[in-house]
Length: 280
Image 1: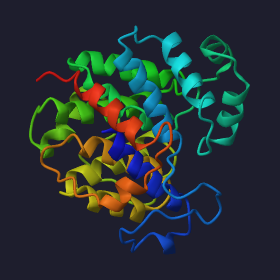
Image 2 (image 1 turned 90 degrees about the vertical axis):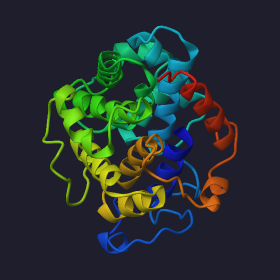
Image 3 (image 1 turned 90 degrees about the horizontal axis):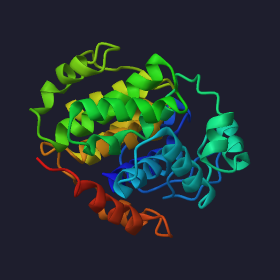
Image 4 (image 1 turned 120 degrees about the vertical axis):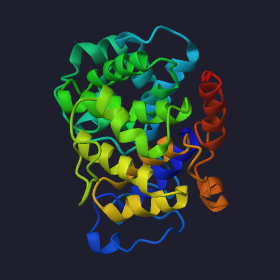
């Protein structure tokens, strides 16, 4: 889950909001460097780091509260500061002392995709109602708007649907419509992906429904253009949970993913802990 999410994030980050001419016919290759950013190829961004924070709270078995979530967000960033965050939120995280300070100073009025991009791990909880409640809670810390929270809930429900084998892949839009009231989930996303919550979520949903291999999903995530890393991160994290989708990602992408303290081995271990909580 997290390994695939990080691969999608790190790979597609090189194409985030670049000229559409560079993405529309994209073919899967090696990690690349973004034409305007200094991030090393194979390094993941905020999408993965915030997913790690959520996952660490889940596997710790500590109460899933606003206070504990805020602590995890701050700790994950401050132990491993990295680019990829929106400039204002990056500066905010560098300035807060701890979770309490985070909650005191945050202005959670955004309808963008920050709550959705970190929501994949929440799908491991056993009951749909619990997934909905906890995913909305984590989203509202920073994105306390109907779109920000509902997009996050939809992402968590996608991973939950596959982890608990609740139906065939094509039944997923109807499942989302029952528990995440928002856009028409059955209507396929088209066009460039902006930074709104529904946009990345619907684009990822389309990729999961239409492609049978992770390699095709990451390739087409880039072809959308726009916020490619968030789409790829969500789509690969969710699709890795689906038994109908083949994990055929090239070995070079796994081995090229960063290997430091919080790199691929750390992610693999955290994945094992997360997935051990799934009981069908």
